[in-house]
Length: 213
Image 1 (cartoon, helix red, strand yellow):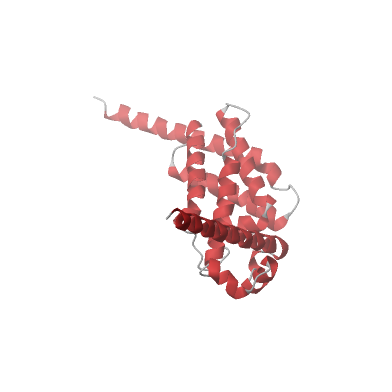
Image 2 (tube, one colour):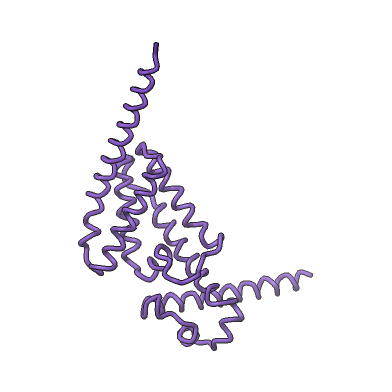
């Protein structure tokens, strides 16, 4: 019984190791040729196996994308959750924004897979997507520390940062034309959100005052 369990564990570890080798090869291929050029024939060659062998470890090409997404999402949450060197909420938010944009622009293939829906009909599994959910939850908490809790402001935040990253990747790859605007964009965002909140609070107080006898 013990021997059977050991054999099963060994086979499981061997299978997982083989899957990791294939995912390594997949990312190496994407870094070389781009996500759009990714295909199983070239992947098999890169991994040193036959194309049918790939199907022994992954059910489909999308299953390989899913494993790649899971690794990229794990790298993303690990980067975003690194400790800050400040306890000041606005400074932490600015640092988080800079991390996000730099993470995106440092690996274009990874950025396209994680944030741009580049692969037609591909949806990551719940397991692979879970790290990205944790990262977004951490971002919401950081925004809340700055008094920003409205969903539309959270949406504005993600749209703003994705826009900066996308502009940098598309129009100035390897440069800093848009990444250098991150701190300024964060200041503008905080100013807008706080003024909007102040206006809402003032309007609410006026309504309350208007109904008092």
